Length: 191
Image 1: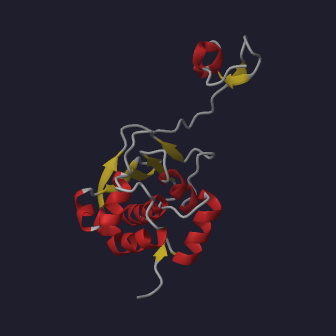
Image 2: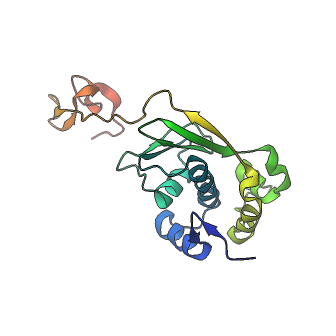
């Protein structure tokens, strides 16, 4: 068997990138890489790639690691739905491909299923080398994908005017209301 690749990156190099970016080798990022690869293959070439992920864990890092879509440039949107799913789409046409894990197929892959369910009897994380072999063997057998069309753009393409909050004096997007979100009672911090 030849050395596997994730999105065209040799597996050993991919693991180095994962450790540098995510901090450790993650089954979620490996699965995410396989999901991204499938989505991009189904979507085809697009200069206007955007990606939506439906979880806050691992999958956003896989997208940022393997595509030009990042939180900072706004081409990656994150929905905290707790679903290990993503949609790659063309931001001009809003047409794309949604990819998610086939839970029923996991029955044939006990390490993946235990990791995914977080149900290890001894509550220890599986050894990455073991679960990565199973993930690579399962690869696209675990994935379901369908073409989708977004109902609306998820990123506002218009520039939002900013101003100074009349209460705290900090700048904020004016579309948030008469004061910044923190001064409207939505602060996540206290002084």
